[in-house]
Length: 465
Image (cartoon, rainbow, N blue to C red; front, side, top):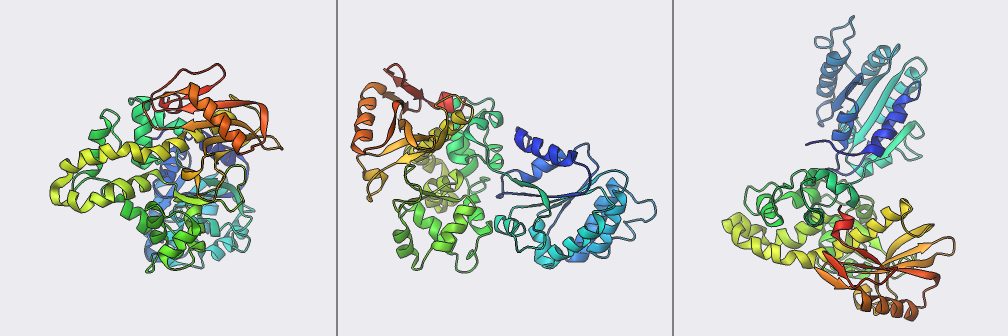
């Protein structure tokens, strides 16, 4: 997989590396987000040892680490191939010695796998680090995909608390970055790819930007041997979530939300128990999002949605057809998936436009002092049934007044004129507190026509340029 972008993350890593003395850091994020690729790209040209843990017996892990150290920084006094490290104290004593005169970096990738076989390793590392940090230029990065585990090692009660001088939580690519992964695709094709893959570099790297949407879906999903046909099942089975074992409560919660039961009470009724902890864990892993009106983020008018595009696509359009695809009906199911995609893409496109407005606000290209961007609705019935519902609302300043309001639809063409009057009516009916000159926004897939002066039009060509 080709490495692209991650300029901000590379800059943060470079700043950490450039500081004198020993240092410990942590890099974490969900599977498929590109952590290992980022670190392997960054360590190029550095005196660095990268060890990928495999949940092996401790002796086997140390033997593999010994071979990696021997290849990068042979000790000269000890042949690590014939006399490998016998415990972690031994390993770090040697590494600290090798880093006495010049920095040496050790990356322990999939660190949670090491903890499975040696739960006391955190405490041992603290003790070891206290011994070596005064006399060495050793740099240590702990990297992992088990989000809950990686965040727990940074908590106040953890042995390594306050030791980290680098905390890098790697996120999927933003909508504005998709073009760098799919340079040959048109903005509309990139939008569709993002609708399926989200910002995951792993999935986007498998999207062939020389093919159209139909052919990519055929190639990735519509045969028994298709690479991503069973991927959603893998995602549901491998995320590090409390209750993800035999009870499979997080998976049941996700499936309930995907089926359209999105309120807390409806989810609880469907799974037969209080879903509070599962919802918190799923939100922490960014598999779901808790959505509230942007004007009252801590209020009771909330619902849950699947935040991960790939998982939402797989649950909605692939898994229901998976048995038939495995029986050889992929080619006849393909047009059904393609025909259903526009309906699926509607909510994804709304979120893409909200993300676009956040990016534009951060760059200072729209109203200054924007403090929140989200959707708005007023009634307990939820946004779908609310006559005052707005797809995009931006608030500004300490007063949190409405400075921008917009309507977003994944349709080929929209006329802006009548929509502006509709949005004005909604804002007035909802009695929203606004700035004097509200910016109105209309978004469509391909074209926004009849755009009055001062109205912002957004299409896939702007969002995925």
